[in-house]
Image 1 (cartoon, rainbow, N blue to C red):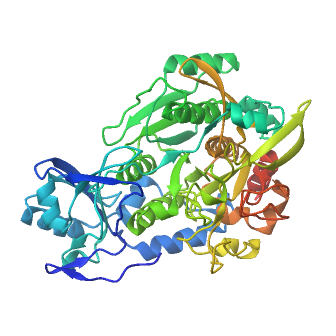
Image 2: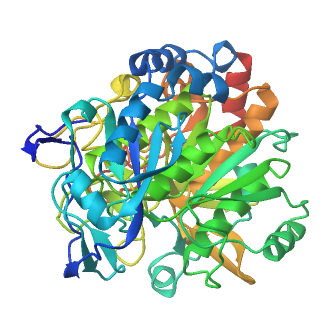
Image 3: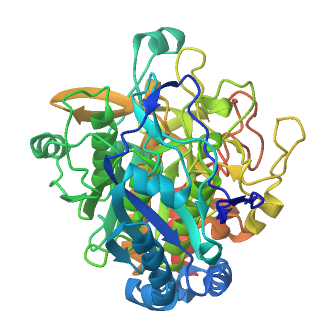
Length: 534
């Protein structure tokens, strides 16, 4: 990641990567109330960062049974924040009359509370209120500043700005899409598991799948009805509150409830004996990060798979946020956690209006399995065709492209990832890695707020692969963990069905890896057998 040059402000130094701009279309409504009390999180450096990076790289190219994943307790002991670094931040907080309300060594976080006036003085920022079509938010422009002695310690400061950071990547089947598409068909997730040849005789027993949600909620009665209709017992579903967010159904399938129910019902029906742990966090950069960290470092539920169907265009994130999330996903890989992330539903533009190609984050992190979308046609329980999902201009299309933030990973070197379609032809991390059915025209039968509906989007693909990972973990006897480097080796070439027809705007499907469907769609049993045999 590129870092900004440091400059001084009142004897302090600019915190690299902390620069913020207001959302396009925002209107200022005045300064924030200086007496309002807020909570801010200071992210600290890890102990032995180089060591953990080397450990992940060394283990990444080994097949699962040879891996040496850390326990969460070992990770905290070896790579958590140091007490000396925490003490320096506590001293800084005291000098600015800020209260330390929480210290988490494993997550490398110190949480502070105080008034906006106190934080403005401490970090040399000016906070204002803005009105935007997406909602009112507290924001800032420019960088954050910290004392010289904290420059090597502090990796990010979060919570000063509380704008909505991400959106869910699901698409309801609507009339415009129907009129522009061929006759539609919908699938129950277990039907897709059969079509995609997921391993049989496994049900996810003993596994825990973490699902990240930034709004909405589920009703237990709906889940009971849904799984009963499928002839399955309802999985154990547990909500976890992060930063005050809770399981709060809105009553509308058009809102975040659609995302929550889709995620639970897809993952849960693929691996019905698994524990489904839903981490509800606020839709801010720190709320999102805290929910992910809560799942990664959960010593009670210990999820070995995490599914994320929320995200936003890379250009809407600060560098400190990109780095912080990427660090969290690297931590997950060291712990043997597979992280599946939706690649986005707005084609190669990712919804940006600047005429350029963009990819979605956190799908662009090299430490996650980025999940793109297809349109799946079948007849008599046989696949008859599968192409890139693209319902534009009336509907959505799979995200995918070349990252502007992350360099090409070593494991993608031989994948023939093309240059970015943008001027300059940047070489970077290619998105996605894998694909599966996402078109709402061939979407998923789900039950949301008492209503049966059909939903698509790459939001469905992330929990689909999360369910597959749970089956494989059960069958192999330990977590498959960080899969990306393994999937790009020749030994696993035979497990993918290549998708060679269609486009997502700027990028076309090709033989081999492409920026629409990645390596293609995995044959579940073939993937499982290769991993188990090695």
